[in-house]
Image (cartoon, one colour):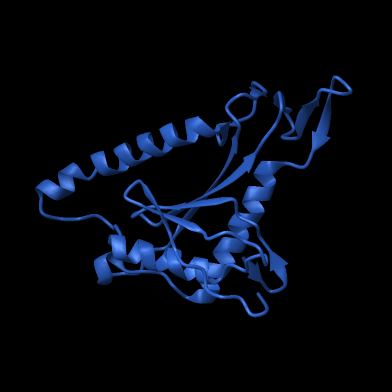
Length: 193
């Protein structure tokens, strides 16, 4: 995404029907990732056999979250609950997913739960959705539906965001996942390609 001359290269974006947008920054480390009490990140370097400082991938994801918030405000798209009622404001969450073989060394006094192995993110997603949808049962029994978007509205938001994507000249099609099955969206022809 590009906004006001600033670029955000979001690795993965998950949008659910509660208008939660989850930014997932992915990193691949050969062996270990260490998070210090002050929130600084280090990766293990096999050559020097020591931990070396790296830029915080969590801070990177949070910057992308701020950019996404600005983009959503600029687009002016805040969908309504099933097309009626008050507009639903987005909730933006940020995560870091690393390869499953890497070890995460965590400090004891700092919440690092948003940094996880990639396979744990899927588990997190499932438990979050079960909690959200499970809490809806009482509303459904009463014939009410809490603030929730239609699948169409979620897809519309996703397509608007994809339309703002500035692809590299040799970029591959962007996959859009619907109902757990990957689908490829056709790319628009970029001038000069």
